Image (cartoon, rainbow, N blue to C red; front, side):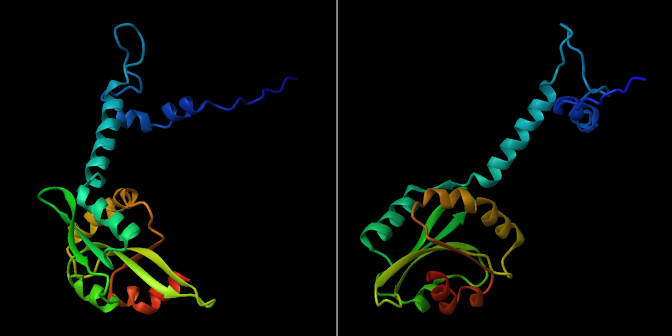
Amino acid sequence: MSTAIARPRSSRAAFLSSGIYSCLSPSPTPLAKGVSGSADISAPIALVADVINMANAVSGMAVNDDCKLKFLELKAKRTYRFIIYKIDEKQKEVLVEKLGEPNLTYDDFTASLPANECRYAIYDFDFVTEENCQKSKIFFIAWSPDTSRVRSKMLYASSKERFKRELDGIQVELQATDPTEMGLDVIKGRAN
């Protein structure tokens, strides 16, 4: 009496037999034989490359150099209290929309955000700890109000991570869809 031991299938064999590959292949058979007898996988590779390019096109919004320079000035020299960024859909680029002077308040900052349009913002929040130490935290706020256009929300959401990578030194991130989600009490709570 012999017992057959089942060998685990390779991941390639499992992939080919799953039927997923056949939906990527232009031919009805899982492997289209080329002239030399080897598998022709150029069509699926081209499809994957197209998908990757589409993903980069959606989230690969260019970042204007001024965005990085103004952020560095805020971080190093404390030249600004806040920076508001907007995406210019025609130029496919993130631009600086407004710079807040160091003497402006948090209320001035929130009043600068449009009620019906998405924006990215940086806010330099000064506070005093329980140990009576003066500190500062740099907040990144993704402002995406419920009343903004769906296309705009999708554009800002898909570009956010790429944009944040350009701004080295963000300490706290907030996502806000209405003013209560980024109120001063929320900022104070997240700063500690």
